[in-house]
Image (cartoon, rainbow, N blue to C red; front, side, top):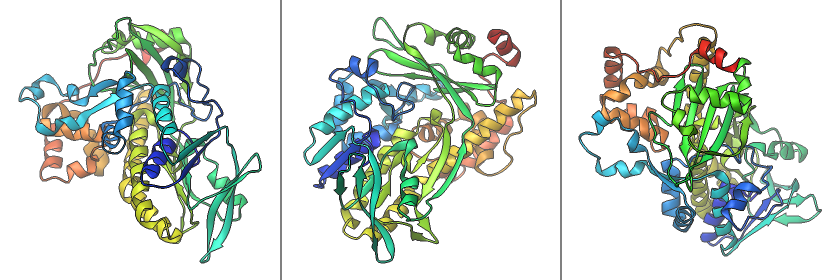
Length: 464
């Protein structure tokens, strides 16, 4: 297992619990801190770009932990993770009928990424048949032919040590070097689709004095004209506030200044109270975020055997929708299932792993990229002083109509929460009898609810 982040550790634990001997190789040398405060304040994780930016475990990810790694979820709760029920977002007039029996699916627990990874790292250290080696940097793959298809059978570390195994799992995240290693080993070119998502993030964490977190008004990710604001409760009375903008918006890049960033948040009526806490850590910025998808297939056949791309190493997107960890845990579960029946035959495993990934994960990736592009087009139109043109057909048109209709129908609101919770895709919801028609009907009859926030002129004044 290459990479000791969330996907690498969770995937390694699941495989070890099935009886496999697993070695996790993590480039970052720093050990797992003993305390939560040390994890937040001093843990050096250069391999995780967004380590101290907002993170969210969507409800589907909570469900995977609850079913497959219940001890990890229990430890996360014991470490102070906050329970978050997305059903609280249902407007009061839709909630009057009371909760439904299956609304519990919207529940999750939230924590800062260093806290989550510290809890997972300590659990992994106690897992039989699992060895985690930190400071172990991989230099290259070791490859041999197998039935005409190159077969990765191990790795060589920068120290010169060689390790062999039945399967090499790439869980190295967004910075994975696997494509280069495959080229260097004369395996071939890994299929890759990649483009800048077009977004940049400015985020900060806060802490309350009494362990409470601010009340949420509106969606967790709220579009406010030419920027969005993301507000997320975390663990132990902490929370994150993040402003998301177009990376091409030069004026809004001034929000890198903490005082100007604070002025913009304060100008958002539904979100200004999220500033009422003690700032912890610095204002963090992240840009150059890629939407990237990889598939080791050529003409319908595996490019290589003996290797599996997991989580962000397989596909990564704009993280503001909060799907990354949940999809990574779903992918780790799929890895466990495919390995249980196909690990003895490398080519069979490669084909089965590709099929499972394409069926369970790729549709979520495609939906996320499409939604991001729609939002970016909207932002760019507003920057130019134009009225954004909504998508005119397909899922995009339904998604746009849902933005108006969602506050008028409890079934539609739950379909929206299912999508945000990585429980069910909107395309699946709209396939139900009458739901798409109901969405379009309500959108045509009602005005879109616009959340209050500063427009371009006010932003220009705030940013000076």
